[in-house]
Image 1 (spheres, rainbow, N blue to C red):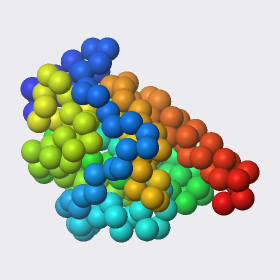
Image 2 (tube, helix red, strand yellow):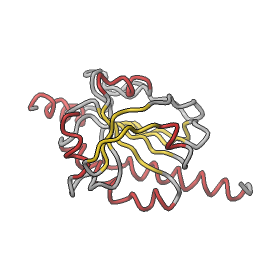
Image 3 (cartoon, helix red, strand yellow):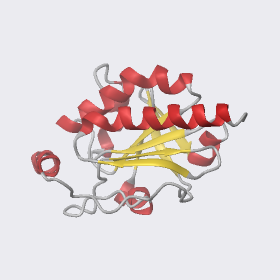
Image 4 (tube, one colour):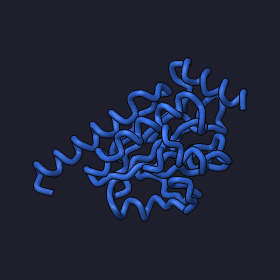
Length: 184
């Protein structure tokens, strides 16, 4: 646990420890994964979620680590803004996956407002080019906005957790404003 926390703190201090993220326009890799919402287990399926609207898929290194706690709390506070735009949010991690049920219902983190999924062996993170260079078995802090057509609308890759929500909301709002101007 201490090594994992140290790795996450070290990663946050380094300017860029993530691999190149997938770019806008790229088809998102489809996946399903064991997940938790408010402590309840279920299987998250990206294709099924996209049928309901855009999805923010955000990768984080490990549950109950300082930066990941900050990021989860920020997504939790902003979840109503995402829902107002018809979007859902899923957090994914390969770290501390045995603690995800508790993390998903923690009142200061996810607060039961969005699901978190376990990424055993960082397989999903690898398919999204969202792993740490120094620890490829852990997800980097990378966020994607995926449109209903399954294509990536935006990506944001930064170990600092403070801008992920803002970046994803800004792109979601611009995309919807653009669609409204085009009449669609």
